[in-house]
Amino acid sequence: MTNSDQLKKTDQSLIALLSDRISLLAASEQPSLDEQLADVAPLLAQAGIPESVWAGVVKSCHASLTPKSATNHVSPRQITIIGGCGRMGRLFKEQLSLVGHNVSVLEHEDWEYAEKLLNQAELVLVSVPIEHTVDVIKRAAKYLAPNTALCDITSIKTQPTQAMLEYHSGPVMGLHPMFGPNIKSFLGQKVVVCPGRNNDSFQWLLDFLKSKGGELVFCTPEEHDQMMVVIQATQHFCRFSLGVFLAQTRVDIEQSLTMSTPNYRQEIDIVKRLFSQNPNLCVDIMLATEERCNAISFLANTYSRLAKLVAKKDRDALIKEFENTQSFLEEKINTFLQPLHTTALQRDFKPQMHTNISI
Image 1 (cartoon, rainbow, N blue to C red):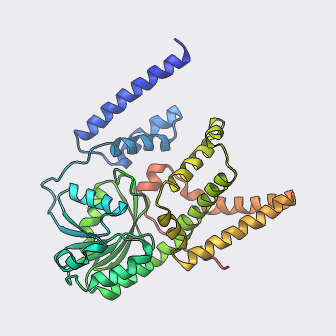
Image 2 (tube, rainbow, N blue to C red):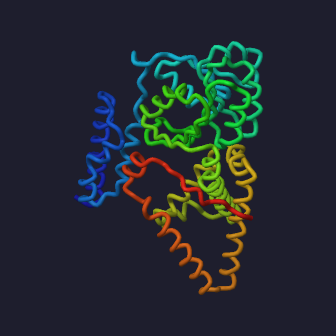
């Protein structure tokens, strides 16, 4: 039997085992991702298999499951999602409906029904484009009952949270789902939580996210927005720029992948996913705040400065830049690069806010 035949046979066995694994998950109470990683960590180390590979297998198995319909353990709640026909709004509508909640949708053409849709809701989720979020909050607030929980799920938090606190006297919380709308499961997905007012009113919602395998990360709206400058805005700009560069230079992507490193393939996949999204969403993430625009400008200046060193073939200066950055990363990051199951699921997020950027 040739190596190729053995590989095919091994793949067939793996596929059969994965099918068995998915069937077992569907028929039983699903253990947490943390448990599934911890149980096999010694075996993975012995076999030389990175934990990230196994985590991907576990997440994919969970994501492939057809979500179970409502159970008797859920007390149905009245929920209205403003923007519930958008991609992220649809995701939350589907997930909340599947466990038995009564979810209504309010779109821009439905405001004549706003009093009915909003006044009787226990929870109102705002899921609209960034530039419309504050105006929608102001418009919706006058229809809300004092005990209605109001929450937004946009990617900036300071302005929406301030608006909710100002215009609504009841419970307020800001959420930022750190994932796109194409996921099939909340398992292993982060949701940033910015408490506002009467946080106990949202406990059932947070419990729902955790029960589906989501990881909750708590911080203030200001901490969130400062972190997102680096986590979202500059990363979007880097990948946006790379995509534009590839298109302008007419790079043969298919040919490049035949001789690519794993890192290059991963980067191309990330760029491809970025450009498969709605262009308005991508651009709005970069332009959402003045701080994001300033940070991107600062990053562009850094690129320009380093490119000039390359053009001058200034080897010593480039090595110095490398060593300075190497020292920074060793000091600041090494303690956080722990095994995946520890980092993602056991450690509380306590941001150290030293990322102010002066332009």
